[in-house]
Image (tube, rainbow, N blue to C red):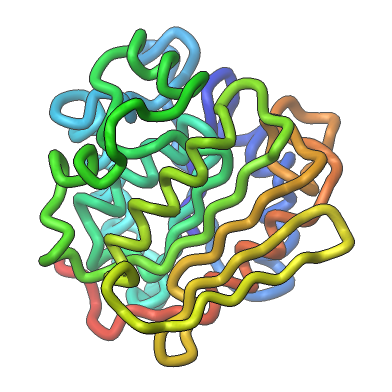
Length: 258
């Protein structure tokens, strides 16, 4: 499990706030927490908004770190899962586009639309308002959706998020339907309302959920169900457990290349 923190956050804070280590101990998996050094960005943000330069370098460096960790630990290369919060979600999305054969599933919590921002200023505008251009057109600037092998994805977003407008989630869902080739199929879309603080929509093909879109009805810009003693974590539905429940359904058929 690879977990990417957000801006103004450390890897340690994400680990404690999400309580992912406790789940990993119970379920028997390894968690990798890369950290953006302050020398790379004054607020410890990943450069998700610079996908052709700094963001690409960060995504590729972290992919190499994942491959190295697999080699050193002997972990199952068919079950590598990637998640990110906010800016971490932005970089996780970029990693999934650049290295799809490395990851079996992806979770983006409070993340921005892919392929739109190119500067810090445009990133802030995107976060506040969502994309003004078609999400599929933005995606096409980064990847050939027709050739993309697919990526089972969980999208989580608080409807009270005042940092990343929830419209970003809807636009991400459009992008990941295209990436998972769900837009031109006759598959049934299942929508389920829950009474415990979220609404979950699942897009299935051949019985497998390839896209789950979870709207957190009372959550702001924070990892839902996290430890509120840590910034950017808040009470609510347990996003850590929801993510693990989704992720463990998926495995890559082939081991990733180094």
